[in-house]
Image (tube, helix red, strand yellow):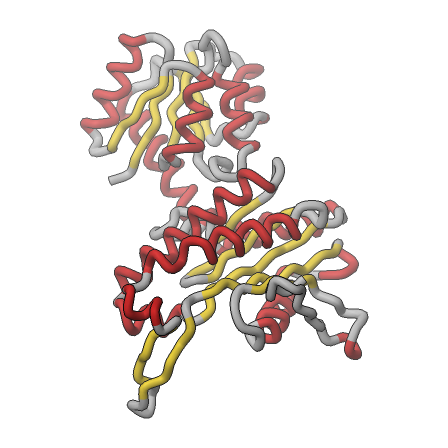
Length: 324
């Protein structure tokens, strides 16, 4: 069931909005101010926000702008509700990131159609992962393309889990999904703490995640993610596997192989339009660097160094065992 956050500081209108949305089959949460809406959008990640423009404390325009500025809520569509039928108000709302604009006196059937349209359009445009609800490949491509067009310096961090397939084989897909969700949550938490406005997190499938950030923050982000992952991943293993520091799984030949406790590998690419050229080239170079890093045990991260080894990336391990 899709979840909608209804926001209005007038109790009677809020009750009517909730009644309509629930009658259409949506799970409805409420907020009574723009400030509360910003907090709930970030914490609860609803599928859509239906928000009044005219509220005290923080109006809908400002709340929408803050919601769209936060990477963890930036992909949530926002429909603005207002009693004003002025073109200036519509332009202001859409200019601050609103996805649609509806007059409060609109016929309920039209409102239902607009809600369904925005939800459908958002799904098609973002390709959000159904497990983690993080944006997928389409949203990632747009993020990188925008940075390439601006010509600004940015960094892309590609992350995936080591020995995840063996874990899935041993513990099952439900347990594997729990690890994926846990990883998504800790990546989001680290980016909230160590990242900045405009950073982006994507889940491009399986155990693969991507962070778009800046060179000033990518080292701290990767170190934070590694520390959080290594400190928590043992919670997903049985005591017997932890004691032997790994799991035994049959390979394709039917022979038992031993696989270490899962770790995480992150490959960082930094550059501008002149360095990358296309999103496809960025992905190719990240795969190349990750393949190299997986030769090292444990969790590692590395910035690409194309000036070394005849254009091939090189990595060096720091004293803690993480690539630096």
